Image (tube, rainbow, N blue to C red; front, side, top):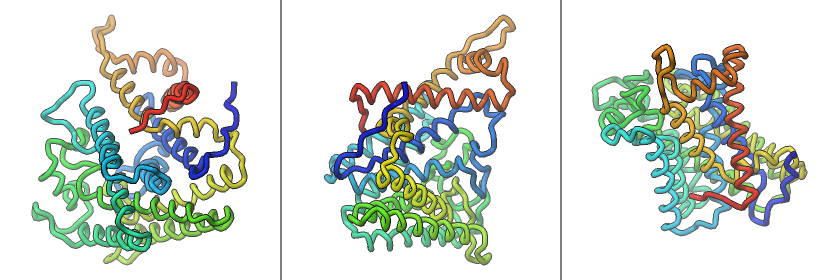
Length: 374
């Protein structure tokens, strides 16, 4: 049975926020769980270095939503905010430990860790700065990060550059984080130390747009402001990342979370959220959005659950008649899809199956009023 249209949001809450958050988490589940990493359509992969794909938008979109959510949050006290941030960091560390618990080489950074840090930083910014101060801080973070990355010689002696192994951020990660970095790189981390500062700017952008939405304007000017400001930021990001003079150029790069990446993704998030706000909250067209609302109400629970399930399926291995050990993930994937679908199609259908599976879990929780809040 299809979900009924969700009721209008309670006063002080935006249904479009749940929709946008839920769509972002569903996309995160989709791109994180292909059946076979060797057969993934390019829009569902991160770009190797400079540039971007749709997949590169997902994480900054979520941080942007964290900022907007803060403007509607009742958690105004220091203690609740700190506890929530620590819970997010703790869940991220637990995901990094599971299932083998490599304590000595535990990866310290991660997606949830960055969300927790950015949440608490944005909470502090909202607590002590007015919107004008928030805007000034955002600009300072973006310009300051550009100056650091393009003008400062790193501790290892490498001249300023944006190469994968020798940029300033990578040099700092090797001093502060190794061996506690992403196992794929072993020498730097995409959620590393320096790049967390522009990620905070992404979250503060969400704060600024959240304040715009909360200001009590009528739906049309609210939507128009989101769209125009979002498109302006997007254009600035593209210009800074692709068309600026050589001395100013700062390429769009998710792994470095460059300032142009912040503007591009923040602008696109604002514009797309503006459209979602108009359709869901202003026009009242809500039936299509019910699955995303369900996802959005248990976003962190779904993300953590998907991570634990994937790690479990990959860790459970045993040898077949040929003596080759295969994971439960691979056995299920081959039996359900790879045995009869072409490789790219099978990999995509498996990922979509994960999206459906966790939607059903989130729906079950929603119908029973179970909401795992951190």
